[in-house]
Length: 161
Image 1: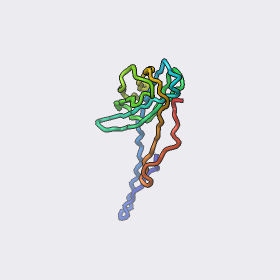
Image 2: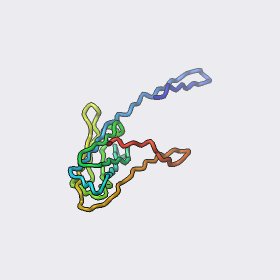
Image 3: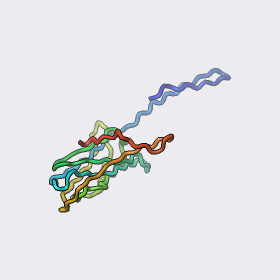
Image 4: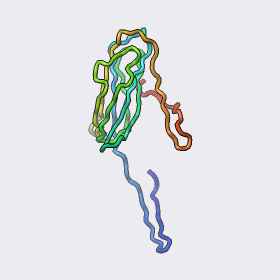
């Protein structure tokens, strides 16, 4: 948080000191992916999720996450303290792997809880579609800076692995 700002009225030498003490109340979201059967012939598979959160009619979070699988199992990606408490989050699986199909609804919602009350969560499950398709997805992340425009964020790491 920045230091206090001092405003001085030169004529009367009055000083007004202002300190911003606002702290955002952010909560957590977990996205769990279950792949109970893995088609080894298709190789590594990537599942991609779009996450949007709204609070009081405004979009307060809009992001993409991915989870990679190289065998059957369950993995979770956690967005820790990134979304305001009370926001309604919609998570949509936008890419279901090259040879997989969803067994649950492709779009799910949750409400972000205060940290002392728990973690909001959604879960998805996929099974092999019967196709043998090699290849998997790639997640590219870009940050917008006013001076440089869109810059590729090469520091992005997959927290689900």
